[in-house]
Length: 537
Image 1: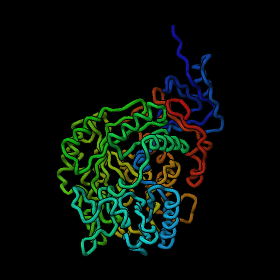
Image 2: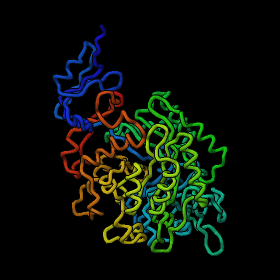
Image 3: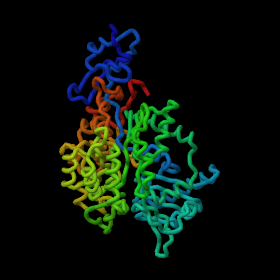
């Protein structure tokens, strides 16, 4: 008779299982990377054998490993180059930062560029969003500055030249090269199709540098309890990168990676994507496709049911919207799960329409998902809940809102649509699946910050900061659910997100209980250990 014993036993902890059948425990037994037993110390001790490793975590709290439901690590490494311009809202500060970066590049780089990222649109209330406005500060160098949302960039004259941008261009999506009255590009480039030629002209990391940087980034996610993430910017090269990371022992966490499908893709490119559906390894896989239904509110490219304050917002991302509907159906028929970027209320409605026509679940049983949902009306919220479509949201994006609705997002939308902002609690109460994430590099990838914003809807650590739509705050349990059960379910993983018998043994060890500390305190709670398949990162 073979006696089954545990590889690892964890004892003495307060274990938040996220399993409604047994919400709390003090001990876990793990074998072959899965939970063998969960219960109290004495019960789980029965699984101890002569070679069992015992990990004592008295006084600590253990949760399932967190999953960031929406992030861009590979694209993020490509965009977070040069100066971090976050927090700059005044022209003088921006120009000073650009001068400093230009001087550094001239001293240190063989092919000097001025790169910057995380820039707030507010700076352009004072400074024109033009190449001419930054020309002297960047010392005439090629430059590319990317706004915090990744949807708009500003290039210098030399940057435009290096990218081969000399005039307006008709894109298959709603990207725009902004031009002046004479048809000359101003430097403002709206959406990625417009600014990608400039980015691709700039110096890039080598393959090995990219592998090292990705490993370092993904490993660092564990410091806030993350053991997995869903990449929303993938391609064949992304999947090959994940394969190479795993083959060389450098893929520390689990990754589900989407492949992008852009409106310009032809039948051959779609067929290449479809061929990737079953690709994967031990800790990574494909099977998800990412589409865009619109852009962002701040530049008038979000798709709205009624125009914004500047008369914009009435154009879909796909100029042929019927092609979007057909594309959703074709990927769904091929067994893919579909994720659609939809920020404006009309974009959200269009995604729901397409999913209902295609069938709302993918081949692995995961519901199709809508990303962001920054403003959603009552009708579509109810439709999403009734259909079981996942609302994949990032409440920490509220950090760019400002008191008095003076920020571009609230100013453009007006009070009625602003009142429907990031309706995460309404989705929860309506019974819709809710998954939470960061959208890094758009916002911080520290999951503790994401949890805190979901609970507070204000800046953590500043009780006097404005609270945006306080009725949409989540409880600590609901927020944790969004980063565990919700995120796992959103990507079709029925054995992640809980600590229960048969589930993957992915967990995080907290030095204080994330359900008992305040949200302001939570961002400072150390995560002393994370594990994937029971193996400590």
